[in-house]
Image 1 (cartoon, one colour):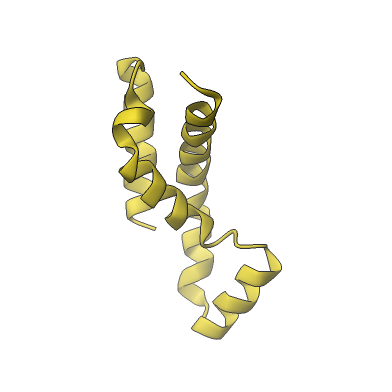
Image 2: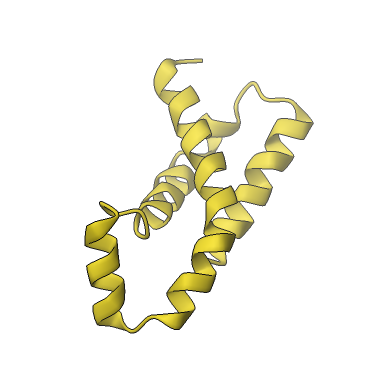
Amino acid sequence: MTLRTQNQRAAFLMHGSRVTAMQRDVVQWNLTAIDTHNKDTQGAYLAPLLTLKSGVDNWNNLTSDLSVEEIEDLNKAKIALENY
């Protein structure tokens, strides 16, 4: 397993756990407020979407050589990101 793959897995899990809290904020903002806040947080509200796209595109690579429990964790993160 490469360092890049490990970093992708870690980012996928991190963003998967963050999006639930971030959704509450996004629902309350209009588009201008989202744009302003996204710039202020250096893209934190778009990063989960980019991580999801990258993770789905490289899903086989992300899940190779993982235990069943680790794959379940990635699946939970994927579901959370898809619902973001």
